[in-house]
Length: 428
Image 1 (tube, rainbow, N blue to C red):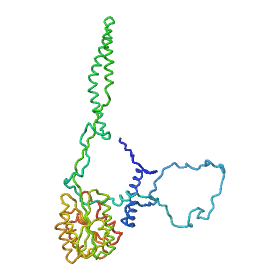
Image 2: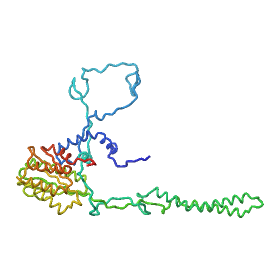
Image 3: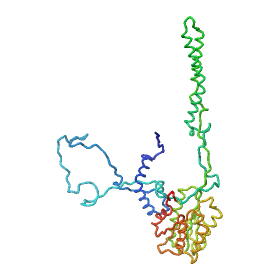
């Protein structure tokens, strides 16, 4: 049987193990509260904890205890006023009771206090992004030696105490003791047999000098046996660990946002909140994901994070300019053989007359054969336009790697985000 001892430092009066067990047991209630909190607060205010309430009826547990066993009379310790057999009146009242609670009495309705507790920032974000992943993330060939992992590589005679292999060290010590003690034990056994044979001789034939020599030899051999150490420095063996290069799982996410004049300020705010949620998700869950920010109206530009979220530039609408720029960046900096390529696009669906057909041609001819996943969100409460219709044809051809969703209001951001990046089944 193996025992695992949790030695993590806990906060005062708290237990990390019990808390994790509680979070696992009431995961459904907590997840609903987290989803409500995400829709209630701004995305920029995501990185803090949340207070969660659970109805007491949902956390009640059955309790087994010994019953009173029939009628009995007791006198509580410390009682100075009553003795056994005394009677006293039932407390008076007019049905509602004379309690000290607030509010008046009522003849209907029922309620129950809720159990409230606070989620830490880490716990809150764990629930927010639970079950999400970048679809179709693949291991790419070795392109550098930066990504390595420690692997066992046999045993070595040198190492740190933390990596000592106890079983192998004890085996080496046992083998050494057998090898060193074997000849000594054999000589000791022969000396004891010789002494026993000498002592069993007739007193007239015994040789006192020989007997003393044998006793001295036996004492010397016993000291040599005791001098063999139980374990020696040469017996120690350590687990050898080497850094093994790993196939790279590097990925790049292209964030493409429409900032044309047809995008109202409300539409732009929703798009920014969607990309802020995507940015937070990638930064938290992946170490080797680069982000490329592209803004477009009639022309597209690669910008930094600050300009992407806060620039007030606007203009007409040519969506193909952004897709062309993404294609050029991939060709110049991100070979598909070495990178997982993702695109997330947000727009209101408005586009120049014949440009939607150009967008479909760019996607089917150049981008989609190289992309792992393309996510498109259309921010509009109205009917879909030509861009959506052309994208539907792309989705029909690349159903497993192209996804489209519509966002009408800010409350749709988180549900749509979860649908786009929901963890796929292993078979897919």
